[in-house]
Image 1 (cartoon, rainbow, N blue to C red):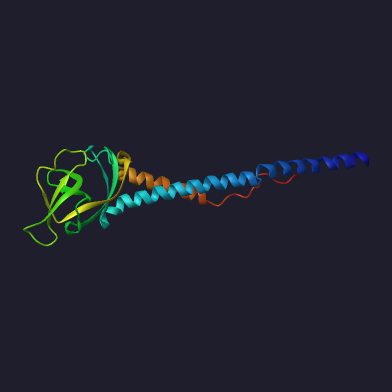
Image 2: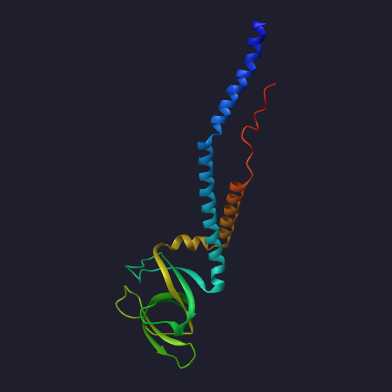
Amino acid sequence: MRAAAIQDSVPRNHVDTVSRIRSVGSGPGRRGARETIENIVVGLAGLAGVIAILLAMGPFVGWNTVRLATGSMSPGLPTDSLLLTHTVPAGEVSIGDVVMVQREGALPVTHRVIGVEASALGGQNRLLTLKGDANAAPDTRPYEVSTVGLVVAGVPWGGQVVTVLRSPWVLGLVTLVASGAVVWALWPKRPAGRHLGGAS
């Protein structure tokens, strides 16, 4: 009888040991760390998705990101600065504003407004005299425009990164990666210990 009792106690002790190991492996600390990682992944994926959407859809509603290719607006906005612009009628521009003006056959220019005059074309058209903050003299001639990209925000870095992200291929890849990260983080979890069957 004693031998039988010892034999019966072995499986139960084994099951208890496995249960303790399983409880340690799936304890609150480990679950908390996983939840933290998932929250970070979802947050970063969401941010990447928002950036991708803004870059793709922003121009359709008059918002654009602009990379400064030169240092003409230094020191405040050096080369490769990233600017956010909003398309507005030229009639709403005031002296001191920084604007982006499109130029036919050349890259847009982003300089500060130092003069505003009425245009013979009337309406919202204006003759804008611009000057880069780092330049000794104004631009060679006024720009006659009906709309401009008014700079509403800017940081002295990040321009090159956004130029790369603006590529349709890169935008598509960022969207896929962000979507995959969200799906991974929100995928239903397998109950802890399901892979460990009960003792026979």
